[in-house]
Image 1 (cartoon, rainbow, N blue to C red):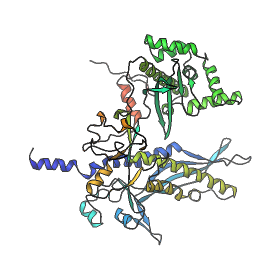
Image 2: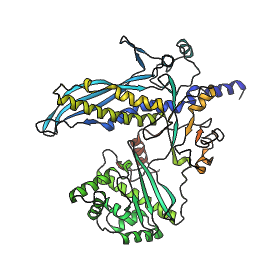
Image 3: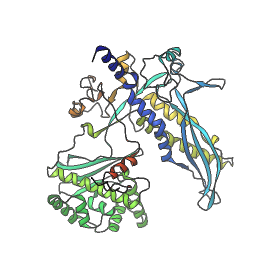
Image 4: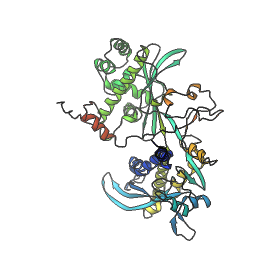
Length: 520
């Protein structure tokens, strides 16, 4: 290849789209699909109107959400397009109005439902990433950029809040919904633990399956104090017979022997007994009916929430949970027998990266919940004063705006994390590029995590082996390698499942297996 061609290839490779592309892709995906998904999860805002006799219940249904391009409102009330350079010079936030369709619905239960008011209203302002699909300078030529005072070489990929350029740091996290088996010590004894971070709709639950020193399995998950006997929990989920439980865990003779020990020590023999036992644990001292109700609620809500899927029967979901727990039990036994190595937390296959779009999704979810609480309060107040219920009067747009801008301005994110957003390093051009491709680990810098700071073999080609700060952050703050390409989640999971089913994969929840075509 001659020099000219090589130059053209390298110029294309280091184009501005490539170096901060993971930020753009992630944020654009959030604007196009992520926001709407969060709104669909929320679905409606329930109110306490209708609790008193003679009152009809009122709720607010949420529909489509859309984001415009950044605008600024002047003192005389006029609105015009806002460009990044103007936002920097005037110390204002480069943000765009967010609109949502809302319906106030009165009635339900006994009375017929009627829509009191329907409107598309402004719910707040969303900070927009410079260079993203909703940015006003997106697709501008170099000449057009120079004309409005922008730098054509600027890579973008950051936000402007109160005139300051802030970049959201890509965060490392352990892979959710994945079984990790490892050794642990409890009361001086070595035990085997299989754990999974079950994540759904922003809720994250740690489910542990431990094999104690007696060789008995115990499961612990949120909202239940202490641990529950494995056999009790599996029976509560619908696996009743001993044979079925053993078969689901493993057919290996040695593992079967371990399982028989667990079945002998089991306190319950049927599903109903198991749910009663669980009810006594989660609601001790309460009435029996309440205990059963609470036990069923805890199983459905807090145990492995990621296995919930729309349109699938509760019995099927419970069975999937039981099978998943059996798989965790098998991992514990295999570890005890030396059939497998303990999983490496520092291996990059066991990690996921949270980019701008994922972080904004977390932020938008909490901001929307805050807005929903405020709308509920405003509706109840208006109803108490016998005022006309209208969408425009019950929505205060500054509630959402404040919840979105403040974390980006300070770096204090939802979930108690700090330093998520940082001031863009403008020392030089390379400094900017380096900062946009930086990666931070959630581990605390005060503790000596020697293993986590080490260069892992799986980082080659993905993480730069030498670019890391000296001092307390050494090995915790890393940078992407030069040729690193960040892949994104599959958007349409059902389509992927259908594809797998057509290849002959059995047992996919909610998907009937399609007969694979016979080979000629």
